[in-house]
Length: 596
Image 1 (cartoon, helix red, strand yellow):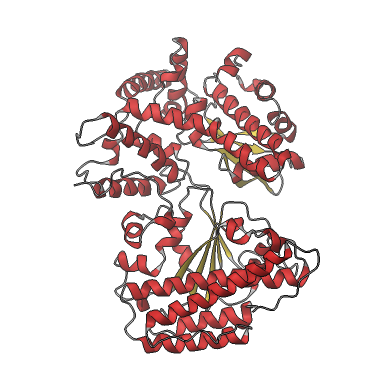
Image 2 (cartoon, one colour; image 1 turned 120 degrees about the horizontal axis):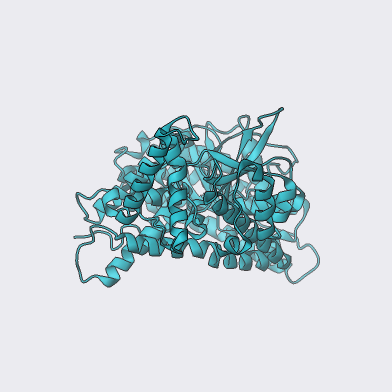
């Protein structure tokens, strides 16, 4: 009997139970063990790269469900997940405050929310029967009450009974009341221009929060190691709250508290409230899981996705079927490519070669020649992207970008079949879903991005249009190169030769933020320093008819070309390929360029 209706369904990690997290989680990235270090860590990655799943897997109840330990106290850390929802922190009335009133109240809200998540986590341990005695928690309760009273709380109405559950429930009510009182104060500010005196409690980081953390560590059923406070999607915090968080990072508290901070590449500042700069390796470490290569020579990503899919198939009751068998390749494509590869190999044997190795020429030109063959019969749209390996490549290192189309494919089979077991996804269905899914990324998702950006700043609509033009420019350019007669044809990345203008850089940054491009730096071939290398998200490859497999070359572009790319894709293709015509590039006509 299937335990999952759709084994590839994508659910928000916050909604999954510890048992679900334990059963579904596979360490997709080799950087995962670095999260376990007793240090402050920033975890960067675009949406869908699995950051929340990684953080939630560290939670104590998940570690119990996964069989990593028998008791929570056996862990070397105690992880508390704290998802950052902008609605909880972007309080318009709070943003009206300046100076000390803002800093004090903003930190107060951050600490209240963190404390609430810590208490919720401890309550989960009681539910999982990890607490033997209420006496331990009663002493904890009394100390927290004392700290709260010292911070200005009225604790007269809070008296816990001698039970573990009642101790935590009483503390939860206390801090919820303090949060409501603070929000009520902010609400009053909306009706006056004058600053109303605040008479409530103020929880400080050093005076209240760190002592609270040490009290959690001292409990008999919690680990002796540090508390991992995992702030998920911290770039949703307002800029000034990010500065408060950076201030916490600057403290040397890692023996007691380690901050694990995930971002979607939108973190706006590395300054504290005092203007001090926090620096990597000195104050924190960084993990960037966006720039993942799917080639086995560079990453274990392929093998890890294989394990994820195998696990989900087994949980769905689909036994003795490998991922490659479940997502088969189109046999027509296989036969056609094999013939073309044989022809290229024969030409290499006869001296018509570009590479020093026979296999390199085959890898470089097989897909290109196949697409040319399809173009002659006007069947370019029949190029198949089916097959497990191809789907892994297209996912661009984002596990959600594999699961989403896979879930759609599975759902289509279920809706059309009559209760027959699903043992594979036909290539035709794979291709139909992948083409549609890629098209959405170019058309529908850009519209959503436009709405999101313009809801914040109306003038951002033009910025999104320029981003769309930029992506089209490179998609069309790479496709034209792929079907050219050039010695290098397979491109999916470009290197910026010099520093671009502020506007162009802003568009590039937005493309990285929204996952359309990945970025890293590479050493310059001449002189000192490094250049930025941008890689197109492979989800775009079906829409632009590109090869999603590994690549060896990248296109060099100047800031002047980028200025054209964000305004006129057709002109960019003509100008950039004209600049490289000395390499034997055979230019497509305008009509052919605009066709793609």
